[in-house]
Length: 142
Image (tube, rainbow, N blue to C red; front, side, top):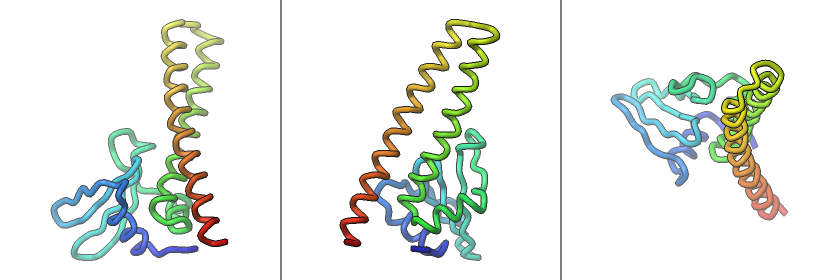
């Protein structure tokens, strides 16, 4: 099902797993590093993410927005989170390989391995959450 940005925003505002972070002149909501905000005057809706820019939100790409519009807020946020964690896992794997081949600093290698383990826990959490939603959705459709 395809949603409009307005529908996704309304889903976000009613989602129990999301947190309202309204500001001066806008209403906004965040969940798992994704943020949806709507300007009170223009009604413009913007979707952002913290995964790429650290502490700062950056606008989602067209493909990422399409994920939200295709899946809705809750599942879309989970799919984006899974994708972002997967990217981080790839980066950590590359760092581990480089460290093992170049510097061979045991403390740094252990730190990277702990980071990988933490990312795997998050990855498995979102993966199982999505699987539960798929099962739930297939029961409603069948």
